[in-house]
View 1 (cartoon, rainbow, N blue to C red):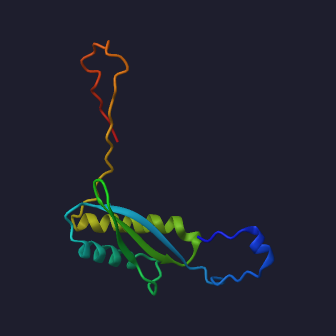
View 2: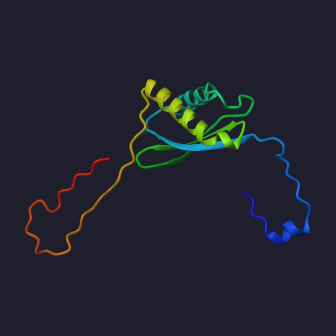
View 3: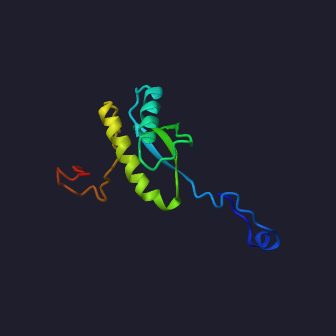
Length: 137
């Protein structure tokens, strides 16, 4: 993203170097379980994305190890499509393909974890179940 002040735009000629090329790079972030072999995960994701109809095969697919997350290793996955207008449809197709491929390879996608703490407002509460909490996802 580039931010250009209106005063600069109004005083200069603008050249759009991407026109008429409508290709667009999209990205997602996913978490995979600790202990996986990252080269294997990269290979599975890359080959899977290249097999999705609508992904531009001449452009690179990137699988980048972004960070050590809780409770997963976070990967940024990037690929190219033919048009920005296809973004939502391609997220659906690629996400489903990655999910299925990682499941088949028995690579877990850990769920997001939440640490919920309940504090009593008054020590006068005598209910023995006052601190019990069940969270359904």
